[in-house]
Length: 443
Image (cartoon, rainbow, N blue to C red):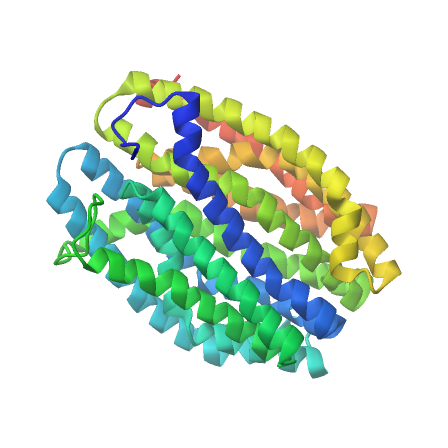
């Protein structure tokens, strides 16, 4: 039975509602990781480092997809909560078409800019060639990737989180199978890994487009888009925190790579790549919960159900705390086997990766609260507070930490920078929770 946004959410019902989004985000992260796994083991360490070096730039280009998806879905959810369903469909259509258009423009710009950027990041020789080749193949299909990202949020708002999960699983399985075929069997190298990725993104981007373009039993459908530019601007402003999160992450990852190139060379970049892949999967649980719960929070706020909003807030904090403890413990246990899985062919690199990941994983104790805090204020339509949390967490605190700590602690300072940033961010998130508790009546 389909769970509706207007219902009362017990722990069981809330977890069942957000679970598809959590699995969806984990699968999205897993199939992104598959490229690195196959490249590392079947193409080599240099190509693996090349993928990791250019990935922050590619994710930065795609960041507008997160902005349109999270900011727009929150606005649509609030409009649905107010009972204006036709208007919500017009908003949804405008945001989707704008996402596709932005993908075309950004993909074209990135295609021509990628070579000087990869060179400026320190790539030379084969590493430079592989970075450019992999990046240009992905950028040529940028609109489908950005649509896939945006639809992940809108499936939940449409009360179809399970369908969104099925689409993501289909895209993930497509990538895994094609990676094995193109890289391990056909030996197409890094181009094969990139081709497997874009074909999977086409599954994740085009199917939802076809689904929402036709009559369906969800809350949303692509219709004549709203002509209000202010709607698009409000969506962008509301999703600014997610844009900031992803852009900041890209900038910070570039700084990590630059510091690691100086301190440990190619091995440092490869080790950081493994840590980032596992980080994507673990943090995907927090992001999945945020995506899954945000439309519920936005709907209840739009409907004026303050008692239900308060209940959702308290339950979310408790669920986040439980996940934080479990993920941190799991990370410490899995650090060695995961390092071996990716770079076991080089014992020195595997040891560096394991040690770095165990330090880095301490951040999981705190990251979930900051991720939920940013998403919570986005769901309430307060993009300014959400953006402030994201800006400080993903850019200001991390940049300061990654620039200062290595000078004091060497290579360990690189791994611990994220931990310091999350500690400082948690203080900011807590202050905002306290400051706005009466305005929104969630505590």
